[in-house]
Image (cartoon, rainbow, N blue to C red; front, side, top):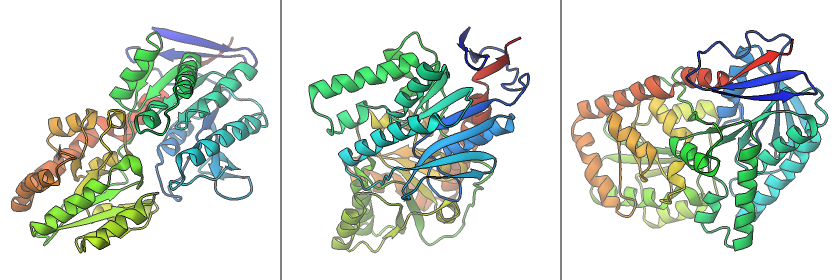
Length: 420
């Protein structure tokens, strides 16, 4: 089965191949070089810190001899461009911060959409667009390019919008909800293919556009960058949360876990590493409870995250327990797998099933911090059991979520052929 899209302006035919079709390589038969535009408001490089999935995707395309151009945003006051590891990156001065309120974020998303449309007009020939959500509005830029210039696009969905802000109570107006659902469906219908970052996201999108091909390519476990370190004879178990500190992350529960472990005199040191709107409140709560077993660490670049991860025994992946948040594909889950850490989550869904089936972690009741105390105790008492679970985490990363494996799946989603 295949879906074809023809770009009249650039004399390029794009064929999206099903995963059952023999893999013949995406760019091997195509000369000259294909130019791919990657739209991602939150694009990061390894030196800047943060989630770097889109960087990995760009590098995977470059490895197949594509030319990759990125349009992204920066908090700097002026626009600028750079070439980083063969990736041409155009930075637009559209401020964004994890501390922003909901409407500040929406304003930033809309500004990026308008600015990215204007920037794309300056790029000359574009053969293909890969648009990464969130925000959902980046899909409008991709649709504009398809309508205006005949550029086919793949739309990647990392979080379900507008379902996430609706379930979190940020969007309450009935007419606004219906409008945003309409925009979401319109983008899905316009895309030549869709990538969902989890099986749950894939299923949700297929329910909206049942005739559209939707692929599941989760976030990556970088098994080259992270190498397991199994410490023996440690006096304290280190439990780390690394990531955004916002309302969706449900980190009040981790504070309660730290307090319950303190009361139980368990030899556990908790670490929260990152920035976000709720960090100050969480720090104040920890001070009020006099939690000497909890340390806050500022946002780290990639090398800093590696140091924190090396010192970690247990990777805590946290979300507020809402159905839509259980569909996500959090980066630090995959980092924890690659680093060979015991994985603990406070939510259900597909990730909870993965770690339970692989016997590399466990889920806890988000309404009962004592559940964490009960379930972590066996790992305090049995170091061999802890290492078995940690080794199972690394094995899961290598078997199912390796960056090399998933990058290959990504580039083989489509095959380009020059018109004869």
